[in-house]
Length: 470
Image (cartoon, rainbow, N blue to C red; front, side):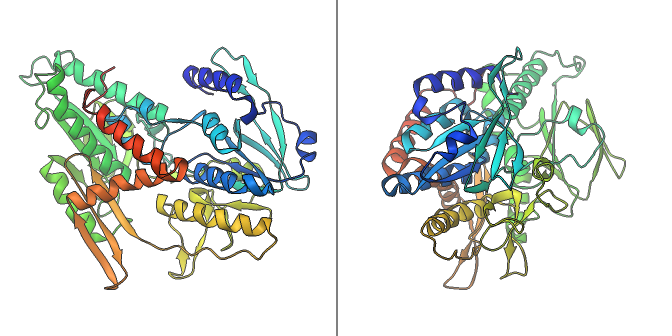
């Protein structure tokens, strides 16, 4: 169910940008089209980049029309969510309305969730959209396709841990990140006012537990520490940001950042220690309570706020609509990114299980993979429109970058000339990390608009608080 702000934006945008949205599109309408119809389900970074660039490229040739489907009205680059959660970034200045992007780049946008698939008729079914008063805004719709691309991404996996879904917050979406930010700020304000139930202590304390030491968990912990050190300038003078705000990362595995090189993980662990962030490894969480986290070794960690970043899973919708999936819910695909059961259906990103022949394994569910697959599909689908053979996708690992907010960044880049990974840290790592987002904006808007946006954000940071306070 969409929130009120998103629904208002959707309705207003539909009224203004009617050519870009057809809320009552029927299968009969789509069959009248003379063009090849490409439907992309999922407006994450990869899906939106693919829709934008493909529609722009095919505008002159008029061989295809592109439709993007997403349950949300707006797009925010997912790697920014930890900054939104900590309050060091205002999502309103970075989110993009799908209908506006559709108008600017000549594709159509349909808001709703994928709820059905008829492969024989080549039709998908999209859910109805309701407001908070249960009034229907958009009806259930069927939409025909010639080529279907699935890019639905992933969601948090609580692994059935008792109490996790009830007492821990995930940050998969902007609304979840905003929920975390509001609770974090409220807890700090109560502690500062000695209303946290710790009135007998000289210094009130805030305990934050981050479950999972992957990139999201590590970056969120550092960003919370960064925000904590700023709060004192805005009235929370009684809280010492290092002593009174305690941040603990709890990881079930033997080390943090299991998906990156060990040298990067070791450097990151050292930097976390310097930030007074506790890291507990080999500690599997067995239960999450309202004010505590319990581990398999018997530790009972007090917590005022718990965030869960310990794993991902794919929505059950892919299995529900009849596609074969693996134990993670991913759809197995060929190296062309076509599904094994239907050559008219492609899948990429987290929701696809894609071969990585060079390593004899599967491509990892990382943003880098999705970005490369989106670029690959841009060329592959244009070859498909020209009735040419499809190329084979090859993933190239360019390394990993971990941001520790304004404190530092660390990572490795793959050095082709010397045949090994290069460890980087400090200014260079921070610049490269920031460039990842700018490259995403450039794919959506072009170089000039990306540059203008960069300058606008730089100016804005000098006229607004460093943390969001409302």
